[in-house]
Length: 250
Image 1 (cartoon, rainbow, N blue to C red):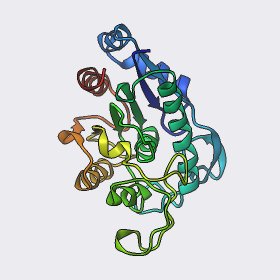
Image 2 (cartoon, rainbow, N blue to C red; image 1 turned 45 degrees about the vertical axis):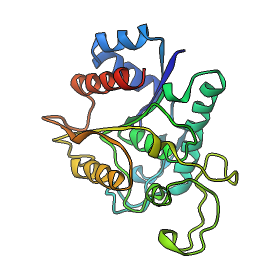
Image 3 (cartoon, rainbow, N blue to C red; image 1 turned 90 degrees about the vertical axis):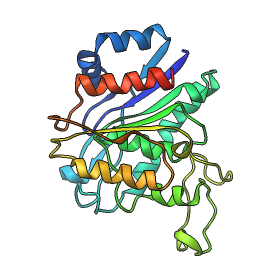
Image 4 (cartoon, helix red, strand yellow; image 1 turned 30 degrees about the vertical axis):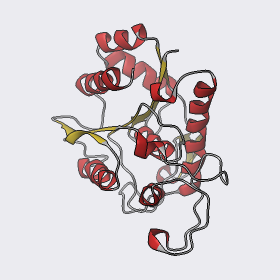
């Protein structure tokens, strides 16, 4: 392929499920433009795992949640690290196959956008773009710690500065030195439904504001709130996303 769009599904969905939805709702002209440019859309599936918010029922989620949905609850680090590594392994496969990192975009919808942000914070490549649709990070996310350091490393912090003695184990390959993560070197497209009552709009906008304050290039500005949109993807939102990717990445 000339480029790759890695599109991660929301909680409880699968790669084939979100593929079917995107292909049914996205403008045909947008999908045709991507296809004509030689762009592969890769729809990975999350590893099924027990999910606390469903009484530990096994479901297709990128990571577990502790306590509830609100960003004030703590981040479940181990499942995030595992899925981030899986996404970054997909990126590495395409890079090793000859796709330039600048022609790779990664992100998704809801939890899929969240894992896109997490993976990009652990990715050593300067990607074409990252995107998060109706997504957010927990207030205590390790992503913010990484960005405050302006690099990803596996060194133990000495307690000076923002780390406060935390063990940093952020990278896709732990222990192989520091690098500036993709989240700081790639534009990050974020959008949210103005009427989202499941993943609240203020959670997504708060994440975008905090990332921007830490040096992330959030686009568009101001934060893109889609009128009359709930927790969903719409034709107009996907048109805006694909137009952005075609103009800036592919």
